[in-house]
Image 1 (cartoon, rainbow, N blue to C red):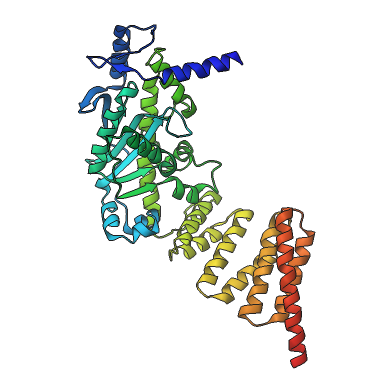
Image 2: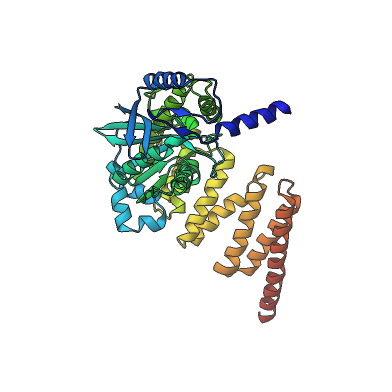
Length: 443
């Protein structure tokens, strides 16, 4: 218990403000085991290890690294791919969409921070950015050797974002960009940059691949999706665990050594390159028409269905052929039922009620515990169809009774949901009984 308390105290001590002296070297207000000469030597060693130089602006200094990579190659997004990646309101805005259509205005961003929870006490100590340049990817990294260099890093980032106001991130809408906005406001001296658009690739990646992959972390997408086109131009061998990165920076601040931070720079650079490559892969998929895979494997079928789901949410006409193609290619049983359900809902939106009913009937005949919920839903949808569309209340009553029987026999339906379903179906049965009784009297 005392060790945990001591660790917390040491972290708090590392966060204490420090004052700057001439020569841009920190001297802490408390005693330090390292002299100024030691600090200078460690910073020089780190700069040499990562190929950094000292950058200066009106707010001070920071370390800066810049490297150009031939891979991944520059990508140009098709207009219909961009329309799917942008929020609907922004996609309809001519000015914002026009800026986003130019990949030269894109800025990829990834941060390494002192914590993963965000909040006003979290700093982005390493800010990595990248942009398309000369057919390849230009990567630039800004590193604050201590907290007094934050203003300098933020000012440099703001200048880059003014040139390229289309931000491309992976989970940046939830973490990186809100954190940076907070840091800008806390400076009270630098305005947060204005974005023309923000493309967060985590969300389309989830829709495209989460049914196939156990996780859609960027490293997992590298391994299972990006590497399918061939070997990557970088390797994650000896890569750092993201969870360890904050402690490495705290160690650096406390004088325990800066050499391990070279691995943080490399990790950040690989994330930026993966992000750029992922942007090209997603834009390529969403910009073209769905195609039947050559190998007809379940993995390719699942990818097609993931694409269909994403297209369906934005009411894109390519959703239906993609979904049909996925079913024809051969989906695993559970995912095939999901795809059939999606296809039925598409037909319903297109007012093709006969086709929707045919698909629901196929689903209603499914057997087995894993198929119970989809079968019950299909029976309910058929009851709705025959009551309101086909005007056949007797058949609607039959499907309602079938749904109730299946619900009572099912063991996999969550109890609270089962009660709601039974109540809803019970109301429908009573209403249909009355309707059929009136029809019998009229006849």
